[in-house]
Image 1: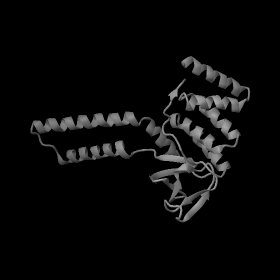
Image 2: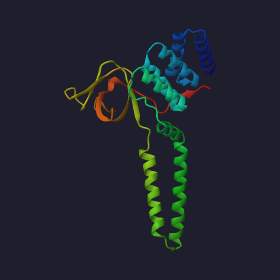
Image 3: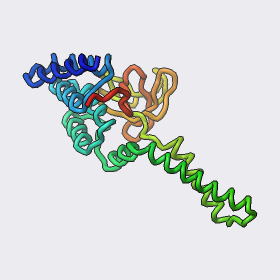
Image 4: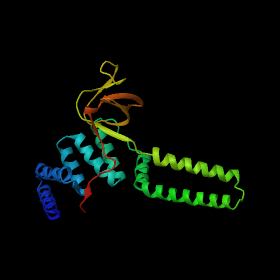
Length: 231
């Protein structure tokens, strides 16, 4: 099976180099969606093909797939560039966005170190208590703050979910109801932050205000890519 997958990738790359982009894309898509494998360059090629076909939502999606596993400023800037060219919302590049992604690359390792630190800290406190040695209130307070930060880090420190608007002329509402007030009508490709959901609606951020959009009008972006890397 591994050999078959490699052969398919080689065939797709050959088609791509011969400028047979749509044929190459079909094979890439099968590898990604059916066999759940990818290479970083494959994702970039898929994004390039979709951009050439003016399918900017799909292009942004594959760039986001790449970025979710290989964060780089160049990809952020590329998404911002396409967003500006196509007058799309939600692609403004900031160093803070890049920092958050880099930080989450090491999320598990940092959490492990924090847990080890908590265990060591607690062990020291317990040993002092067993030996009936006094524990300063400042030390107790520091430990409680440390545990509180650890709880916050493990449960609330996330990148947040984002989505791409899939369809044209999508109504964005003030409340989760078809009878609510209309904020605006948005087109294909805008990227929004998702802050919650209610029934068939997502609660989103739209131009610094809370709004609602139907779930079937939004393509959720990955965080990270849950497929097998080939190379």
